[in-house]
Length: 376
Image (cartoon, rainbow, N blue to C red):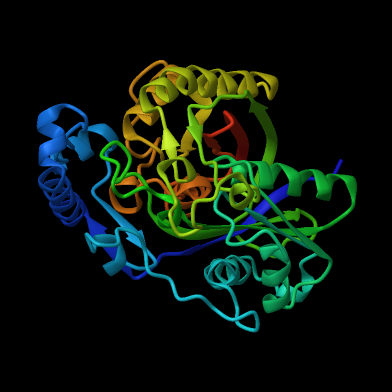
């Protein structure tokens, strides 16, 4: 059986960022205007008043302090409260492909690999810019990669599901070098007028090169010891934006309501997902004859600091150190499928040959993926 390695990673970070203070100021201005415009109905009890957000609430609930975004002014504009993204012509590179290509080129450079030597490109992300042609095929074309390409979406678990798919392709002999790209423009589907979720997401793109170990030229390989996936249906995280929206209503397409943006029952998600993910990691390690005390790193999905801390305690049986369980939430916020890959990309220092870690993502579906790696 072929040995499969992660030979390179890449990261694109948008230059613009929004602090909690900026986001709260915009949100509270919207709340004040809404309550003033609906004062009569609020007094009559037919409309519920909106409540202010605060930096203290956001940090306690999530651990987030900043988030990078592809466009800042439109999000903070109380009249708009969503990014303002120029519509590109069909002959231009799409924004999602553009940021994905940037991350992919860094992964290829790190691995010492030319794009023409790549056999497959997978775009694994939550927030696809269009239905077709596949963003993956567009990235393949821009890079000059060979083989084939396709998009896949398993929400926040997409990157680990993509790595598992790439590993299986290589082990079966269908490919020797597979690029998994996760471009996430999460700000486009976030309801910035919802107090419970307006602070959650940021924008980013990551890339992972997965290769047959015999073909790798990288000096920083991580052997993929195993990959394990699990799903269980739930409506507690949902986004109803889709192909049938136009046919479901007479409402103008511009008038998107809350149901077609990101919706989450946060407390229910916390209660359901923490034990699911903890169990997945522990069982996966057991199948590989690895005990939790053998882990040097846990690169978890960066959704919520409280979830990650509890998962870490359940897996290790103690409080994980910041080095064992890196946190990038404070700067990037939740970046959907890219979060665990950002943590992996940025926090490999101090690992020696033979050290073991787990890349784990989890999210809507519910879905969760565990990828156990060993530094070569």
